[in-house]
Amino acid sequence: MTNSLLKAALPLSLMSILVGCGGSDGSSDTGYVQLYNGSYNSPYTRLFVDETERSGTNFADVTTRHNYSTGTYDLSFEYLDANDSYITISEQEVSIKGDKTELIVMSGNFDEPTFTELSVPISSDTDEFNLGFYNITGEDTSYDIYLATDDGVFESAELFSSAQYLSELDLQTLEEGYYTIFITEAGSTDVVYESESVYFYDEESYVAMIRPSYATEENGITLDIVTDNNYVTALKHQSALGQLRFINTVDDYSPVSFSTTRGTTVNDTNTVASDTYTDYIELSPNSYSVAMYDEEGTKLADNFLMTLEREQSAVGVFYNDIDNGLRMMSVEENLTPSSYSHTISVVNLIESYAGQTVSEVDVYFTLNGETVDDATNVIDGLDRYDQEEIDVDDEAYTVYAVYEDNGQQIVLIQQSDIDFTEEGNYILILEHDETTSSGFKMSVTRTITDSVE
Image 1 (cartoon, one colour):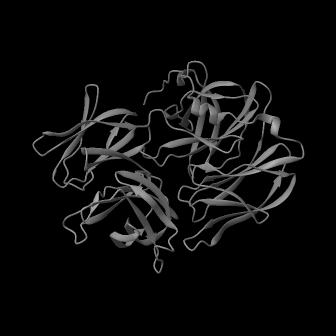
Image 2 (cartoon, one colour; image 1 turned 90 degrees about the vertical axis):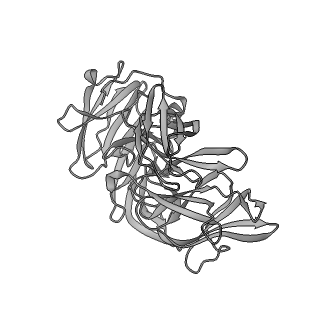
Image 3 (tube, one colour; image 1 turned 135 degrees about the horizontal axis):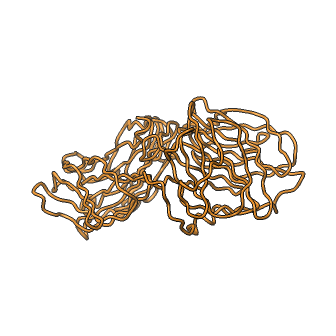
């Protein structure tokens, strides 16, 4: 990897996230409590304080920061199962301290998560900020953290701290300004992580969670920056690549292959039949021109734009637009090894039924004994040639794609016992298929990082 990163202005979106409220919102007799969810396979987890539900969070995010008078409170951490019943994960007491946030970190496997309490001052002095690193990557992991200022290169970076797995948070004070963060394995000078140049504001406290990225890099790491606002800023490894694959849903074109082009660099995929995914190709974060070829190498489509971010996994779905011919849709793949709930990206390529134009469909995920009217997992009005995400619990479902014609509901596709219980997330494509009795089909594929496969 390269160890250098040119100093660049911080994007406005990132700047706005890292700006906190400073010390003005604290007082000596009040403090805060907040939950950071670092459990990689967890569902949406809710924070309860003295039996009152306050807020919740998904993996790699935080709850709202809640203000309380100093004193001792009972906390519980819960989630909703498929029957909408609250399941308690853990219970503990917390002592709220003046001008501090008790940041509860949930980490590890959600089957037996670890809860750690970090006491973080809500502010620092003028022209200074507090920064500490907390390692939740896993047992037997230990890192050295280096910071560079003006030139942003590792050769001029200084050792800031070390972070063993779940070791005590070491908050240190630094001057406000731009910093580039480098991480090496303990005792090594080989950089395994490099951030962009980040501006840290004064009168703030920042906790940087070192966690597995669960993305395109096998065994990669990401920094989640937690401040005194209600957001997490994920700083991705600057040398991380993205990955891309394709699927052609048009049966008239089979087999096919694909290519991506940037400048004079061309990357070709393997050749696949229709409704079959290509192998991944690894690419630098950039925008690319995409083409599809038939078996003889003749271009069937060209110059479709695909933009790929670092650590992003995406699939280019080729389909036939009834009005405009061959088109491509980009679908981002969620690689997190979710176990208790799963994100499903539903793609609707259905155009017509019995000679009538189908502009949208409703998609129902029903449990055994549950009707479409009872279903709580519903995508309502998914437009043709569009996509939408839905989160479902770890269960098997009967999935219906329903078209409404003048008040009459018509089942276009009904597929029983689709098993959404393996780790990871899913892509579900609805499309025409003349070989089936209904004339339609539903294709399901699972997406998950190689780090846990």
